[in-house]
Length: 233
Image 1 (tube, rainbow, N blue to C red):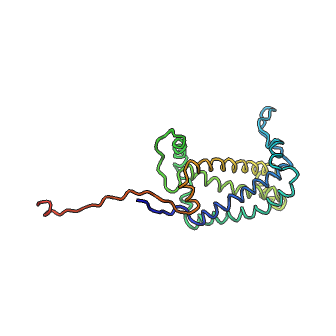
Image 2 (cartoon, helix red, strand yellow):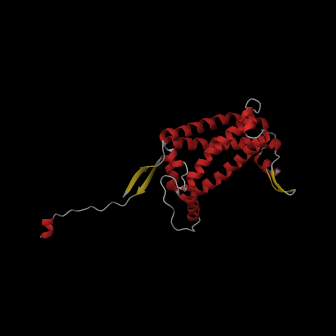
Image 3 (cartoon, one colour):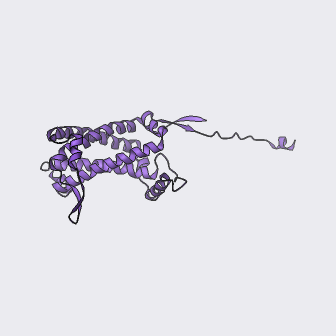
């Protein structure tokens, strides 16, 4: 028997779908800003393994010579990103939904079992409620990353006015490194998240749009009671 079960609230879906284009614009405009001083790379013993980013990357995306445009978009949409994040955090606290998101004591152990199940190494997945252990860790981490992006962003945007945030981040240059690393983290999260959505199937994706999920439930067999007189017959 198929039943319709509510899975995601309107507030959760609103914040999810609003945040996706906002964060995409933030990353794109951040690249326009980073182009003006692209000093970061992974260098070990004088050998550069990865440079963020090569010239062909900038030319393909049409990034060069757009610093002012990038700053305008970045500083505008950061307010939408912050307000959307504050609204979501307040909603999870007031509604009590934070209990479904915050990792439990054994979440890190269960997350490993979830990974083994996703890789088809382990047959059965560990028990879960609304979110499994890996999702709890990932969704909590992305909230922490969002807070970190706002703090480090303000620290490098107004290092004099927000000198206390700049000091908290270890200085301007370290704050910029943290901000850049968080951006790379968002991109990696996007890739993993999209792959997980594809693997989970259309039913899981549609529930994030509609808020409901069609569940197949096996009806419980009716329990018949027979009195002692009828048994005696």
